[in-house]
Image: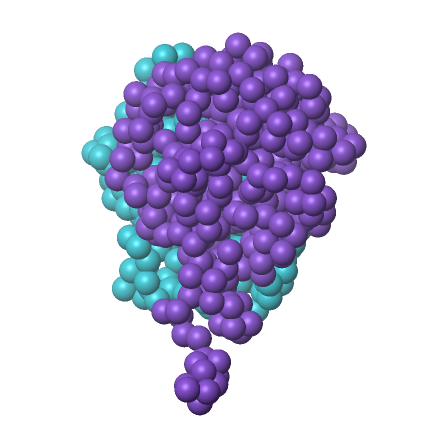
Length: 258
Length: 319
């Protein structure tokens, strides 16, 4: 059983959803997602669940957090739910980020709502050389994230498409500005697929390993319907399901839509 | 004596008295060829993987039977994404029969089903009559299988599936060929994208099918009005979910009046009352599809709801 304990706007159209749970099949790791039924009181609209990667998790407090942007019907309904509402939630689902690269110089590159799963990741990585490169449409969309990451004591570079922060542009361009003088050993990235494709291309060109978390239109979230199939780059391999083998993939593992 | 009978009548049924089992008779007129199910629920192809995904959530042996993801002669990567669109009370899919091919199915997937005690049905698709013959030959005498479901209705592949399923003559020919080769239980899955489904249903019966399954998805599309183009990469897909249930119930009802073989009714089932509705329309067994994608434990929940209905209406035996 999951209950909403907070569901507040933390940026323009961006919400923080905090749930209290009584039990989970296992504790989630960074990169895992949960599939939330947003339709209420026996309504079948929308029919499918909505997948959200975890933003934060606190086992001691039985608390799990998500950040979402109101885009369509499902997130609109979700944003109107009050504290105390009980939710039907499945998870944790998918394959999480690996945390075994904690040692070296690590960059986290996030675009838009793709920033959300990087927070719990940054918390668990505990590397002393961890830098964030974050991009969004404008400053207002980034303020909440900036405050949270700075709360972890991390170096945080910001870019916006509509106004000049450190630069005016994307997280990708921002990151590329630093790539040469501060070359990472490993990267983690999440954001629009085009951004992921560009980050992946630059990283592979520079022999930098890493992982990405992809967003795909899902049906079931549990691997039965094959709606979210991703084509493997290695043609000898079968398609990979974003909901089971993903949403986290190694750089170069699947073909991204550029 | 009379008192005792009155007592028996008055005795309220309890869960232990209920019998949910159903038998799908075979046209082969031998009892051992009948498909015996502990309850009428059969998972619909493509909504339950190959068992292990749902088995993470509950013991799938509680179900009546299990249908595998559709298989073809050769491996298929499926269609481009997006492959799924949501509509009012439904979804439109265009997966395109992504599957590892029949050889890998036999080698890698079938052995994994040996831990299950429920009947397993393999769903087969093809682009030609020869494809169906090949599949029937390869699956004949696979002891892991209780039967096969011939998919003559997939709307998501070009030049096969639904093209056959809309022509009663083709349905007859393919079913007859498969019947000559395959000795297990044969279900023919029919498309609703046709003027009169009783014609294809009768063709399947006349060709020796043991049962028919109806309905596959309804041909449909959705347009993304922001992008101003079709949402699915494949443009068209198949509509399923609660939206299609009344269409399916009507088609089952129509066919029940004309057929002698059992009907596996499916389309938008998401509760025990939906199963009862299909059975009242004439279905012997009932498929659950889209609901598995939303609620992986729908199977056991629905079985519980059927029992509630039986207790409420004092029905001891479902079939």
